[in-house]
Length: 98
Image (cartoon, rainbow, N blue to C red; front, side, top):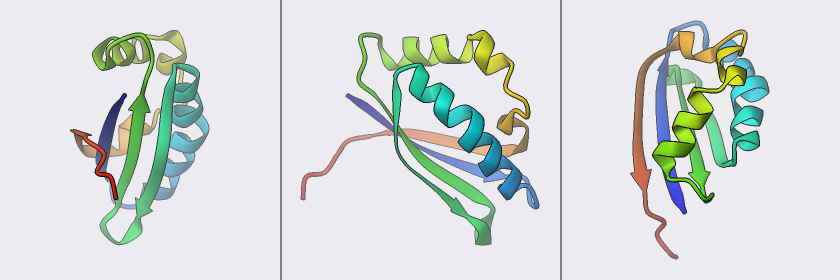
């Protein structure tokens, strides 16, 4: 299983629009392509959006991402929330057992 933490700086004044477009477009499409979303958070004070994606399918993370981003469905997202992302960061994460 591969888990990735994603942190996005969102164009000021567009966090609500980003969240709605992500919630109704990106999230369900990611799930259809075999990803799981372990959580998502809007940080209004800093105009950031943070989410955790996971993939546990037969492809590598890179192959699954390529299939997702190369799909006609992803290209057709309207509005595409990526237009409001100014500073994307992502890191793979390892679970820590409590």
